[in-house]
Amino acid sequence: MLNLKDLNYRELKNWVVERGWKPFRADQIAKWLYVKKVDSYDKMTDLSKEIREYLKENTEFSSLRLVSYERSNIDGSIKFLWKLKDGNTIESVFIPEDGHNTLCVSTQVGCAVGCKFCFTTKDGLIRNLKTSEIVDQYLEAQRFVGNENRISNIVYMGMGEPLANYENVKKSVQILTDKRLAGLSNRKITISSSGIIHQILKMYEDEEFPQVRLAVSLNASNQKTREEIMPISQTNRIDDLMRTLNSLPVKTGYRIMLEYVLLKGVNDRPEDAHRLARLIGKNKKRYKVNLIPFNPFPGSPYERPEDERVLRFQSILWQYNIGAFIRWSKGQDISAACGQLRKKEVERVVKIS
Image 1 (cartoon, rainbow, N blue to C red):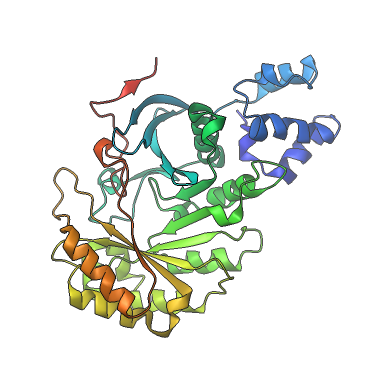
Image 2 (image 1 turned 30 degrees about the horizontal axis):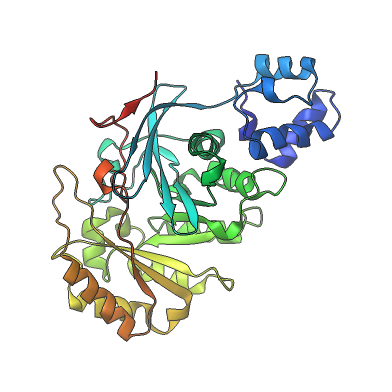
Protein backbone atom coordinates (compact mmCIF):
# COMPACT_ATOMS: atom_id res chain seq x y z
CA MET A 1 0.00 0.00 0.00
CA LEU A 2 1.27 3.47 -0.92
CA ASN A 3 2.74 5.71 1.75
CA LEU A 4 2.53 9.36 0.66
CA LYS A 5 5.89 10.00 2.33
CA ASP A 6 7.48 7.94 -0.43
CA LEU A 7 6.64 10.85 -2.75
CA ASN A 8 8.52 14.11 -3.17
CA TYR A 9 6.49 17.25 -3.85
CA ARG A 10 6.35 16.82 -7.63
CA GLU A 11 5.25 13.20 -7.29
CA LEU A 12 2.68 14.05 -4.63
CA LYS A 13 1.11 16.73 -6.82
CA ASN A 14 1.00 14.39 -9.82
CA TRP A 15 -0.60 11.69 -7.68
CA VAL A 16 -3.28 14.12 -6.46
CA VAL A 17 -4.10 15.25 -10.01
CA GLU A 18 -4.27 11.63 -11.20
CA ARG A 19 -7.00 11.04 -8.61
CA GLY A 20 -9.04 13.82 -10.24
CA TRP A 21 -8.56 16.22 -7.32
CA LYS A 22 -7.58 19.89 -7.57
CA PRO A 23 -3.77 20.44 -7.44
CA PHE A 24 -4.04 22.53 -4.26
CA ARG A 25 -5.06 19.37 -2.40
CA ALA A 26 -1.39 18.34 -2.51
CA ASP A 27 -0.46 21.43 -0.48
CA GLN A 28 -3.22 20.71 2.02
CA ILE A 29 -2.08 17.12 2.48
CA ALA A 30 1.55 18.23 2.78
CA LYS A 31 0.64 20.80 5.44
CA TRP A 32 -1.14 18.19 7.59
CA LEU A 33 1.63 15.60 7.21
CA TYR A 34 4.74 17.76 7.54
CA VAL A 35 3.74 21.01 9.27
CA LYS A 36 0.88 20.03 11.55
CA LYS A 37 2.30 16.49 11.88
CA VAL A 38 -1.12 15.02 12.62
CA ASP A 39 -1.37 11.36 13.60
CA SER A 40 -4.38 10.37 11.45
CA TYR A 41 -6.21 11.29 8.27
CA ASP A 42 -9.32 12.13 10.28
CA LYS A 43 -7.59 15.28 11.56
CA MET A 44 -7.13 16.69 8.04
CA THR A 45 -10.26 18.78 8.47
CA ASP A 46 -10.04 20.91 5.32
CA LEU A 47 -10.15 17.80 3.14
CA SER A 48 -13.56 16.44 2.19
CA LYS A 49 -14.80 13.32 3.91
CA GLU A 50 -14.58 11.48 0.58
CA ILE A 51 -10.89 12.34 0.17
CA ARG A 52 -10.11 11.34 3.75
CA GLU A 53 -11.89 8.03 3.28
CA TYR A 54 -9.99 7.41 0.05
CA LEU A 55 -6.69 8.10 1.80
CA LYS A 56 -7.57 5.74 4.66
CA GLU A 57 -8.54 2.93 2.28
CA ASN A 58 -5.72 3.30 -0.24
CA THR A 59 -2.66 4.58 1.61
CA GLU A 60 -0.87 3.75 4.85
CA PHE A 61 -0.49 6.60 7.31
CA SER A 62 2.78 5.50 8.92
CA SER A 63 5.37 2.94 7.86
CA LEU A 64 6.57 2.16 11.38
CA ARG A 65 5.35 1.75 14.94
CA LEU A 66 7.06 2.64 18.21
CA VAL A 67 7.84 -0.55 20.13
CA SER A 68 9.89 0.85 22.99
CA TYR A 69 12.10 3.73 24.01
CA GLU A 70 14.86 4.51 26.51
CA ARG A 71 15.62 7.92 27.97
CA SER A 72 19.11 8.72 29.20
CA ASN A 73 19.34 9.81 32.83
CA ILE A 74 22.58 11.63 31.98
CA ASP A 75 21.78 13.88 29.03
CA GLY A 76 18.11 13.33 28.12
CA SER A 77 18.80 11.50 24.86
CA ILE A 78 16.03 9.14 23.76
CA LYS A 79 16.61 5.94 21.80
CA PHE A 80 13.58 4.73 19.85
CA LEU A 81 12.97 1.17 18.69
CA TRP A 82 10.62 1.12 15.68
CA LYS A 83 8.91 -1.92 14.16
CA LEU A 84 8.48 -1.91 10.39
CA LYS A 85 5.60 -3.46 8.46
CA ASP A 86 7.62 -6.60 7.68
CA GLY A 87 8.47 -7.18 11.35
CA ASN A 88 12.06 -5.89 11.19
CA THR A 89 13.13 -3.27 13.71
CA ILE A 90 15.35 -0.20 13.49
CA GLU A 91 16.57 2.43 15.94
CA SER A 92 16.90 6.20 15.91
CA VAL A 93 18.09 8.64 18.58
CA PHE A 94 16.80 12.04 19.73
CA ILE A 95 19.69 14.18 21.02
CA PRO A 96 18.98 17.41 22.90
CA GLU A 97 21.81 19.91 22.48
CA ASP A 98 22.50 23.53 23.37
CA GLY A 99 20.23 25.67 21.19
CA HIS A 100 18.88 22.85 19.01
CA ASN A 101 17.74 19.24 18.91
CA THR A 102 19.12 16.54 16.63
CA LEU A 103 17.65 13.27 15.38
CA CYS A 104 19.97 10.46 14.27
CA VAL A 105 18.11 8.34 11.69
CA SER A 106 18.74 4.89 10.24
CA THR A 107 18.79 4.17 6.51
CA GLN A 108 19.08 0.37 6.47
CA VAL A 109 18.08 -2.62 8.57
CA GLY A 110 21.57 -3.64 9.63
CA CYS A 111 24.69 -2.77 7.66
CA ALA A 112 27.00 -4.54 5.21
CA VAL A 113 30.06 -2.31 5.56
CA GLY A 114 31.53 -4.33 8.42
CA CYS A 115 33.45 -1.72 10.44
CA LYS A 116 34.96 -3.72 13.29
CA PHE A 117 34.32 -1.04 15.92
CA CYS A 118 30.57 -0.73 15.13
CA PHE A 119 27.92 -2.83 16.87
CA THR A 120 25.35 -2.36 14.08
CA THR A 121 27.31 -4.48 11.61
CA LYS A 122 27.05 -7.62 13.76
CA ASP A 123 23.77 -8.62 12.08
CA GLY A 124 24.89 -7.81 8.55
CA LEU A 125 22.55 -6.15 6.06
CA ILE A 126 18.92 -7.25 5.88
CA ARG A 127 17.49 -4.57 3.57
CA ASN A 128 17.36 -0.92 2.61
CA LEU A 129 14.76 1.33 4.19
CA LYS A 130 12.09 2.92 2.02
CA THR A 131 11.94 6.70 1.77
CA SER A 132 8.85 6.77 3.99
CA GLU A 133 10.59 4.65 6.63
CA ILE A 134 13.34 7.26 6.86
CA VAL A 135 10.98 10.26 6.87
CA ASP A 136 8.61 8.63 9.37
CA GLN A 137 11.44 8.36 11.91
CA TYR A 138 11.55 12.16 11.93
CA LEU A 139 7.77 12.67 12.02
CA GLU A 140 7.08 10.04 14.68
CA ALA A 141 9.97 11.21 16.87
CA GLN A 142 8.82 14.84 16.59
CA ARG A 143 5.30 13.87 17.63
CA PHE A 144 6.75 11.95 20.58
CA VAL A 145 8.95 14.75 21.95
CA GLY A 146 6.39 17.50 21.24
CA ASN A 147 6.55 20.86 19.48
CA GLU A 148 8.38 22.42 22.43
CA ASN A 149 11.34 20.19 21.52
CA ARG A 150 11.56 21.01 17.83
CA ILE A 151 13.93 18.78 15.86
CA SER A 152 15.98 21.07 13.63
CA ASN A 153 18.95 18.83 12.74
CA ILE A 154 18.91 15.44 11.04
CA VAL A 155 22.02 13.27 10.89
CA TYR A 156 22.07 10.16 8.74
CA MET A 157 24.33 8.35 11.19
CA GLY A 158 22.09 5.59 12.51
CA MET A 159 21.97 2.00 11.31
CA GLY A 160 23.29 1.46 7.80
CA GLU A 161 25.43 3.14 5.13
CA PRO A 162 23.29 5.98 3.70
CA LEU A 163 24.98 6.10 0.30
CA ALA A 164 24.36 2.37 -0.21
CA ASN A 165 20.64 3.26 -0.16
CA TYR A 166 21.19 6.16 -2.51
CA GLU A 167 17.82 6.77 -4.19
CA ASN A 168 15.70 6.47 -1.05
CA VAL A 169 18.10 8.62 0.95
CA LYS A 170 18.09 11.24 -1.81
CA LYS A 171 14.31 11.40 -1.90
CA SER A 172 14.09 11.59 1.90
CA VAL A 173 16.47 14.58 1.82
CA GLN A 174 14.31 16.19 -0.89
CA ILE A 175 11.25 15.79 1.36
CA LEU A 176 12.96 16.99 4.52
CA THR A 177 14.41 20.13 2.90
CA ASP A 178 11.52 21.12 0.60
CA LYS A 179 9.85 24.26 2.01
CA ARG A 180 6.49 22.93 0.75
CA LEU A 181 7.01 19.76 2.80
CA ALA A 182 9.09 19.38 5.99
CA GLY A 183 11.08 22.56 5.30
CA LEU A 184 14.23 21.85 7.31
CA SER A 185 17.40 23.79 6.52
CA ASN A 186 19.86 22.13 4.13
CA ARG A 187 22.66 23.18 6.46
CA LYS A 188 21.06 21.17 9.25
CA ILE A 189 21.16 17.86 7.36
CA THR A 190 24.29 15.68 7.51
CA ILE A 191 24.90 12.46 5.62
CA SER A 192 27.61 10.24 7.04
CA SER A 193 29.37 7.74 4.80
CA SER A 194 32.05 5.13 5.37
CA GLY A 195 33.74 6.53 2.27
CA ILE A 196 32.25 4.86 -0.81
CA ILE A 197 34.07 6.97 -3.36
CA HIS A 198 31.87 6.50 -6.43
CA GLN A 199 28.72 7.20 -4.41
CA ILE A 200 30.17 10.36 -2.88
CA LEU A 201 31.01 11.60 -6.39
CA LYS A 202 27.54 10.65 -7.57
CA MET A 203 25.93 12.67 -4.76
CA TYR A 204 27.93 15.79 -5.58
CA GLU A 205 27.29 15.46 -9.32
CA ASP A 206 23.56 14.79 -8.91
CA GLU A 207 21.70 18.07 -9.46
CA GLU A 208 18.56 16.61 -7.85
CA PHE A 209 20.36 15.79 -4.61
CA PRO A 210 19.95 18.83 -2.30
CA GLN A 211 23.16 20.39 -0.99
CA VAL A 212 23.67 19.01 2.51
CA ARG A 213 26.63 18.39 4.78
CA LEU A 214 28.90 15.39 4.25
CA ALA A 215 30.62 13.47 7.03
CA VAL A 216 33.12 10.74 6.17
CA SER A 217 34.23 8.05 8.61
CA LEU A 218 37.99 8.16 8.17
CA ASN A 219 39.11 6.58 11.47
CA ALA A 220 42.74 6.10 10.47
CA SER A 221 45.64 8.06 9.04
CA ASN A 222 47.12 5.32 6.85
CA GLN A 223 45.89 2.54 4.58
CA LYS A 224 47.08 -0.39 6.73
CA THR A 225 45.24 0.67 9.88
CA ARG A 226 42.10 1.75 8.04
CA GLU A 227 41.95 -1.53 6.14
CA GLU A 228 42.23 -3.46 9.41
CA ILE A 229 39.32 -1.70 11.09
CA MET A 230 37.27 -0.83 7.98
CA PRO A 231 37.38 -3.59 5.35
CA ILE A 232 35.70 -1.27 2.84
CA SER A 233 39.06 0.48 2.58
CA GLN A 234 40.37 -2.45 0.54
CA THR A 235 38.46 -1.08 -2.45
CA ASN A 236 38.12 2.53 -1.31
CA ARG A 237 41.71 3.26 -0.45
CA ILE A 238 42.49 6.16 1.87
CA ASP A 239 44.68 8.04 -0.65
CA ASP A 240 41.98 7.76 -3.33
CA LEU A 241 39.33 8.82 -0.82
CA MET A 242 41.25 11.92 0.29
CA ARG A 243 42.03 12.82 -3.33
CA THR A 244 38.30 12.62 -4.10
CA LEU A 245 37.32 14.70 -1.05
CA ASN A 246 39.94 17.31 -1.94
CA SER A 247 38.40 17.65 -5.40
CA LEU A 248 34.79 18.19 -4.32
CA PRO A 249 33.19 21.62 -4.81
CA VAL A 250 32.58 22.65 -1.20
CA LYS A 251 30.47 25.75 -0.57
CA THR A 252 31.21 28.21 2.21
CA GLY A 253 29.76 26.87 5.44
CA TYR A 254 29.70 23.27 4.21
CA ARG A 255 33.04 21.96 5.41
CA ILE A 256 33.46 18.20 5.12
CA MET A 257 33.50 16.46 8.48
CA LEU A 258 36.14 13.80 8.93
CA GLU A 259 34.93 11.45 11.65
CA TYR A 260 37.67 9.73 13.58
CA VAL A 261 36.77 7.07 16.16
CA LEU A 262 39.67 6.82 18.60
CA LEU A 263 40.60 3.23 19.49
CA LYS A 264 43.07 2.78 22.33
CA GLY A 265 46.49 1.72 21.05
CA VAL A 266 45.24 1.37 17.46
CA ASN A 267 44.85 4.85 15.98
CA ASP A 268 45.14 7.26 18.94
CA ARG A 269 48.91 7.72 19.24
CA PRO A 270 50.72 11.04 18.67
CA GLU A 271 52.21 9.70 15.45
CA ASP A 272 48.67 8.97 14.21
CA ALA A 273 47.68 12.59 14.87
CA HIS A 274 50.74 13.95 13.06
CA ARG A 275 50.11 11.60 10.12
CA LEU A 276 46.44 12.69 9.96
CA ALA A 277 47.54 16.32 9.87
CA ARG A 278 49.90 15.55 6.97
CA LEU A 279 47.09 13.67 5.20
CA ILE A 280 44.90 16.77 5.38
CA GLY A 281 47.88 18.93 4.42
CA LYS A 282 47.10 22.29 2.83
CA ASN A 283 43.37 21.55 2.67
CA LYS A 284 42.75 22.28 6.36
CA LYS A 285 40.06 24.91 5.62
CA ARG A 286 38.07 22.29 3.74
CA TYR A 287 37.70 19.97 6.75
CA LYS A 288 36.49 19.75 10.30
CA VAL A 289 37.69 16.75 12.32
CA ASN A 290 35.30 15.13 14.78
CA LEU A 291 37.18 13.01 17.32
CA ILE A 292 34.95 10.32 18.81
CA PRO A 293 36.25 8.28 21.77
CA PHE A 294 35.27 4.67 21.12
CA ASN A 295 32.04 3.46 22.74
CA PRO A 296 32.63 -0.16 23.89
CA PHE A 297 30.02 -2.86 23.32
CA PRO A 298 29.86 -6.50 24.47
CA GLY A 299 32.51 -8.60 22.74
CA SER A 300 34.31 -5.63 21.24
CA PRO A 301 38.03 -6.21 20.54
CA TYR A 302 38.80 -2.53 21.21
CA GLU A 303 39.02 -0.28 24.24
CA ARG A 304 38.14 3.36 24.83
CA PRO A 305 41.22 5.58 25.20
CA GLU A 306 41.68 7.61 28.36
CA ASP A 307 40.53 11.23 28.15
CA GLU A 308 44.14 12.43 28.32
CA ARG A 309 44.98 10.53 25.12
CA VAL A 310 41.95 12.03 23.40
CA LEU A 311 42.87 15.56 24.47
CA ARG A 312 46.48 15.04 23.41
CA PHE A 313 45.37 13.89 19.95
CA GLN A 314 43.19 16.99 19.62
CA SER A 315 45.96 19.34 20.73
CA ILE A 316 48.34 18.00 18.08
CA LEU A 317 45.80 18.69 15.32
CA TRP A 318 45.24 22.20 16.68
CA GLN A 319 49.01 22.76 16.43
CA TYR A 320 48.55 22.34 12.67
CA ASN A 321 45.61 24.82 12.74
CA ILE A 322 43.20 22.00 11.92
CA GLY A 323 39.73 22.39 13.43
CA ALA A 324 39.43 19.32 15.67
CA PHE A 325 36.52 18.86 18.03
CA ILE A 326 35.81 16.08 20.50
CA ARG A 327 32.37 14.54 20.26
CA TRP A 328 31.76 13.25 23.74
CA SER A 329 29.01 10.81 22.78
CA LYS A 330 25.59 11.19 24.33
CA GLY A 331 23.22 8.39 25.29
CA GLN A 332 25.98 6.04 26.42
CA ASP A 333 23.94 4.78 29.36
CA ILE A 334 21.21 3.57 26.98
CA SER A 335 23.52 2.18 24.26
CA ALA A 336 22.57 5.02 21.95
CA ALA A 337 26.04 6.47 21.41
CA CYS A 338 27.90 6.44 18.12
CA GLY A 339 28.37 2.90 16.79
CA GLN A 340 26.14 1.28 19.41
CA LEU A 341 22.82 1.02 17.57
CA ARG A 342 21.58 -2.46 16.85
CA LYS A 343 18.10 -3.79 16.21
CA LYS A 344 17.40 -5.44 19.51
CA GLU A 345 15.49 -4.75 22.67
CA VAL A 346 17.41 -4.20 25.87
CA GLU A 347 16.44 -4.44 29.50
CA ARG A 348 15.77 -0.86 30.59
CA VAL A 349 13.06 0.13 28.13
CA VAL A 350 9.54 1.50 28.20
CA LYS A 351 7.53 -0.84 26.01
CA ILE A 352 4.61 0.51 24.03
CA SER A 353 1.51 -1.68 23.95
